[in-house]
Image 1 (cartoon, rainbow, N blue to C red):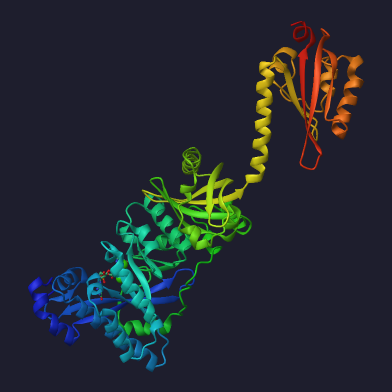
Image 2: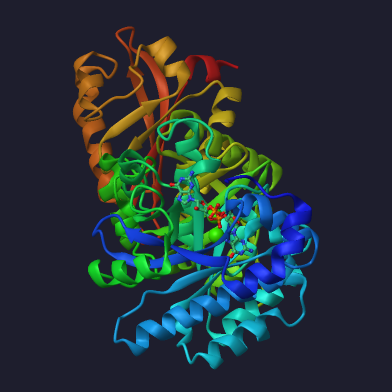
Length: 536
Ligand code: C2E
Ligand code: CA
Ligand code: CA
C-alpha cells in the first residue's frame, strides 16, 4: 500500500529505517549541456517504507528537522556517499564529484563539519570528490555563522555549492557576501516564461555570477528549451529530469561508466560570457570585448541610489588616476565622489541607459582623495550600458575616459571667451572669433543680426569679401592682416575699415591667442562703429 506516513510514524520508524537501509541515497547527474558529459551528481535522500511505500523528502525532512534528527540522516547520506565513492575507487571506476545536502539545522551543530570530515577520512575518499550544498535561506538572519561554516569546509578542501539560489530575498547581496564556489539556480522558482521576466532575472543573476567568477548550475531543468536557453545566457551546466531523474546507487554506478565525464570549469572566461546572452546582443559583443582590452571599465550594481562596484579592470584604476589597488577601489562607493550636481548628471545618464537600452555617455567631475596626492578634481567621460536588471536593481557596465586636461583647457578658454563676450555686449561691440587652423569664423549674435553674417563662416574671410561686408578696396589689406595673424607675426592689430555695403566706418581690432608652445590658435576680432563711439 502506498500512502504518506504521519509525523508520528516517521519518528517511530526513523532509527530502524536508517539502520536497515529503508533510508537510502539516489543520485541525480549534473551535465554539461554543451558537451553532454557528466560533471558531477547530487545525492538525494529517499525513504522506502516496506508497508507504506515511497516517502518523499518534502514530507519527512521537515519532520526530521523539527525533531533535531536531520543531522543523523544527513550524516547517514554522507557516509553512504563515501562508501559508494570507495567502491568506485576500489573497482577502478572513475567517479564524479558528489554533492551532499547540508540542512540549515546542520549549520547550527558545532561539530558537523568535523563529523563529515571524519567519515571522509574513514573511507579514504579524496576531498575533491565531495561537494557540500548549503541553502541560501541558511544565510538569512546572520551570515556570520554560515561564513564560519563555509570557511571550515573550505579549509578542509570541500567545494561549496549555494543551493536554491534565487528563492530567498537578498540573493544578489548574498552572492557578494558569502564565498561560495558554485551557484545552483532552480528553474522551478521562476515565475513567468524564460523569455520574459523570469528570464530577465535569471540572465541578470547568471551575468552577475559570472562577473564574480562563480559558475552556475541550473537545476530542475525539464525541457530542451530550458537547457538551450540557459546555455545561451552562459550557463551550460544543468541538472534535471531532462537528462535524468535521481537514480539508485547501482544504476548510477552503471551510468558513470557509460557517460563521459569532465570537470566543472571553475573560473570565468570573460570571452565565453559574451555568448549571445540577452544583454550581450551580438551587435555590441565585439565592442564589449574590445572595450575590455582597451579601456578602463567598471561593473556595478545600482539600487535605490546606491552603487556597489562588482568589478573593475586595471585600466579603470589607472584612468581614474587613483593610487589604489583594485580591491580597494571595489570597496568604495563610486557615487560618493560626486557633488550633488554631478551626481544628478550621472544618475540621469544611468536612467537613460535603462530606458533606451543603449549606450549613453556623460561627462562628470569628481573629487578624489588620496593619502599621497591630497584632494584633486578629475573629469570623467563615461559610456554607460545596462547589462542586467532584476525587479529592484540594475547592473551597469561603464567604460571610462579621463578627460580632465582636455576639459580644463576648454574651461579656461570658455571662461575667457565668456568674459570677452560680456564685455562686448556692454561696450556695444561686434565680436567674432577665428579658429586659425580651420579658418572657421564664428560671429556674435549682433554680427548675425545687424551685419547679416552667417553663424559659421568657413574659409574666412573670403565669403565676407564676396558678399560685400568687407569692401573690395580693403580686401587685400584684410587678407594681409589674416596672414600676419596666422603666421603669429603680431599679437594685436587694429585699423579703421568701412564695413557693409553702406561703408560704415568701424574700428576693427584683433587679439591673437596662442597655445602653450606659442603657436597661433585663435584670433578674437571686434568692431565698434566709429561715428557712434567716437561721437560720444
Ligand atoms: P533540492 O536539494 O533542491 O533537490 C532537488 C530536488 O528537485 C529533488 O527533489 C529532485 O528530485 C528534484 N528534481 C530534480 N530534477 C527535477 C526536475 O527536472 N523537475 C522537478 N520538478 N524536480 C526535479 P527531492 O529529492 O524530492 O528533494 C527535495 C528536497 O529535499 C531537496 O531539494 C533538498 O532540499 C531536500 N533533501 C533531499 N535530500 C536531502 C538530504 O540528504 N539532506 C537534506 N538535508 N536535505 C535533502
Ligand atoms: Ca540540493
Ligand atoms: Ca536545489
